[in-house]
Image (cartoon, rainbow, N blue to C red; front, side):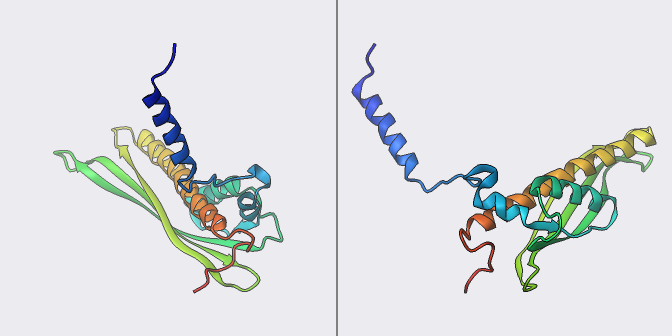
Length: 175
């Protein structure tokens, strides 16, 4: 079975067009690539509270380094809120929204220069049921999930920053 010439030409044109679009793998070189090496040079400063403990663990799992002698420090401040959304006739809450926001700064420890200053955040809906235990368990599960989501967002931003500075380590942007 032969393909018609227009389909073959269209497929070839599409392939050539995608190769020139400028997309490059973020983690080129795998675990020994420049981005992965830059991320292992980051240590996570202690973060307050239960949400902070969860966030620090999630960040350390993703960064894979920061075990002393790290060149960079990641300072994170969290804002964790639970807000009631729906209300029953007896004025009890039916649904909650848990919001986790993080303001983070990547600091070069040799010069104390702030290299990245940004925010990340996510939220989750929680059904409030008659069982207080089930509601608290759902709130805790939501916090665990949100910590992972926000940590992924932070690491993606740091990896993008490291990728934009090849060969310069993670120096501040030049004016």
